[in-house]
View 1 (cartoon, rainbow, N blue to C red):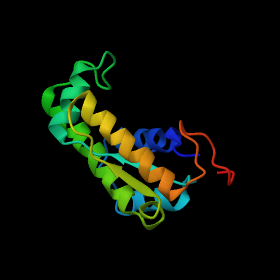
View 2: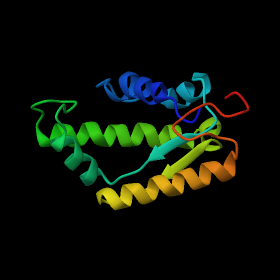
View 3: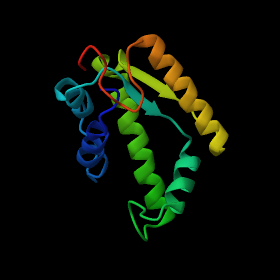
Length: 135
């Protein structure tokens, strides 16, 4: 499998939504325990871009939140995922995408991602299907 969105949702619900400060080592422990797929794709965007996209969503994660609270929440998410990305089990499986703004930038990033995946795992099928190796 190319991507299991469950990993991202679990990390987000367990460590981002929790208002308590992150305890030292908790993200590393998560990385030690979570089942990992063949590749993990991290999409990076600047905080301002994330906040703009969040404000335009039909279902924002924190309806009615003050701008500072929304910024703090997004910054925490960025920090948590950056920590996971550096975990040794994750780092060897990660692919990082930096999409440019606009539809053409996202499309270009998607094409590059498919190109990289086809080189990294030539028998991988597109759309997140399992590879011939059975992942």
